Length: 217
Ligand code: SF4
View 1 (spheres, rainbow, N blue to C red):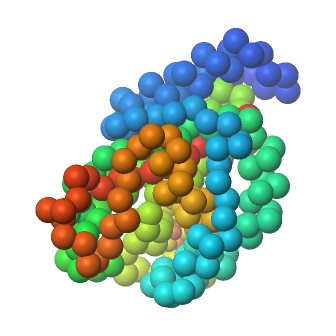
View 2 (view 1 turned 90 degrees about the vertical axis):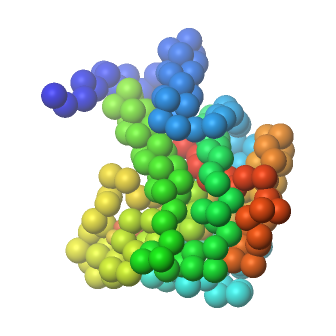
View 3 (view 1 turned 60 degrees about the vertical axis):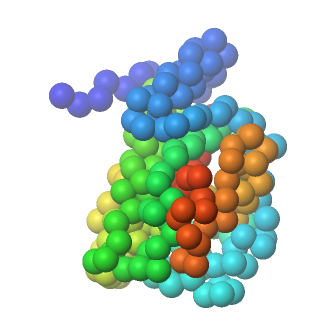
């Protein structure tokens, strides 16, 4: 059975909106989120240096898919977009450090990243629920590294080839790919976060984090 949409009126009813956002928060937790915060647009920290890190040192996903730079909105466009939303659900999921600190992190044949995929799915489900509830501009952002690594692996991006995204109902832009400073946002939320890379020793890190965001208005 399909989803039953709520009638769109173009008017926000504050009480209903609060109830809906609370329901999305619960949904995120049911789907596996460790914590969820309702944030305002002022809590979305955009910084040009985040995108600079996509091309120096060059990220292996740069330009390989529709959701990573140089595709997608630039940072000024993103600032204008974020400014149109009042509310966001900032989602955290703890993952084992081994998932993010592995020399073979970028090799889908040798290393699995289920947490990253799960966060994309949580974000997509909340975005979809909000859409059918009458918030058609609900906009989701997944965690890292990119939809290419998470969904398509070594297969070429069909979107770039003009054939549409294979996972259009699951894949989204990532927070960092549009210039969101997820480190500062997480720290501001009071979440423990560590810079983790291929050179990290998992035993030195309490946990890894997958982070996602859904803007609702
Ligand atoms: S086809 Fe794959 S790589 Fe391309 S945008 Fe979709 S999920 Fe990303």
